[in-house]
Image 1 (spheres, rainbow, N blue to C red):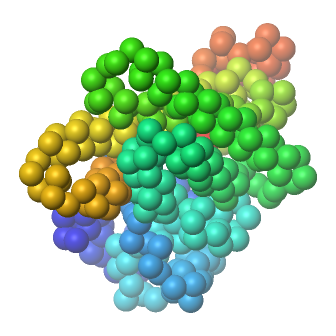
Image 2: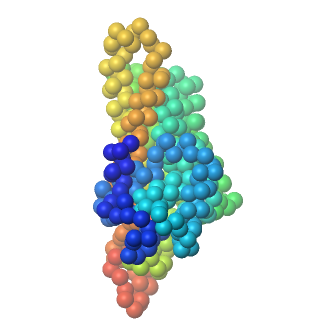
Image 3: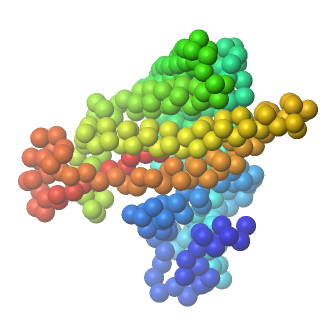
Length: 340
């Protein structure tokens, strides 16, 4: 796709590696992450559903290319774009801290196809209570898998317990909200279109439950706080609250376009003669619509806030403020990784 390829390159893209005046730092993103456009380019390059088609042998080859370059070994005829392409494909499939290849359906690139089926089912069978339970169960199972595969560091026994707790609570909240709203909307005799928005509201409540429970340890122990040189100077629970809140908001905003637009489009579509003659197309059309919209809303949603969040030292815990004030060059702003 030439348009996307052009979007994901820069002025040095066509240069060969032996023509560069200084080596590329593959540990840093290619594009400026302080701007929305830079973040959008990064996530468009990683959250690509077609990356799921790559074989394990090809992905291992990309991993070797990245590792070799970091060790100073590379093909001098390779271009900058080719190196970054290998890095994008590597990032899409391997855990950034453990270096392990993640389960294919737990990768960020699996968001669009998996949610096309799950959310398509939620939006299509939103009136049947048994279907509501099944699709919310499937939705939270996939969400739990996504959280596990994209966790911070290696998993421990506590992580597995939190995973099950988050899964159970989020499923209960999602199903309970959906069934309650369906009952309320039905008793109020509101327009049928209103019923179609119930899955989004229920899913948003479930997501707001899932993420905080999954990351509850951060509320107790805090998350790492770093200075501008990426040196850890402490841990903060205040920063953790901001990180979790922004991630939950991003996930909801990511889902909003297809969960809100799809019902409107389907409501119009259901009134056409074609639909009345071929009602079986409802499910496939809903899935395709979700896949198409999510292919764009997922990278856009991930790009709303910087991955590297910042916070004023004056907003941190008093004891942490005191610790930072005693540093030789005490910063006024510190940074943290908000997660995805």
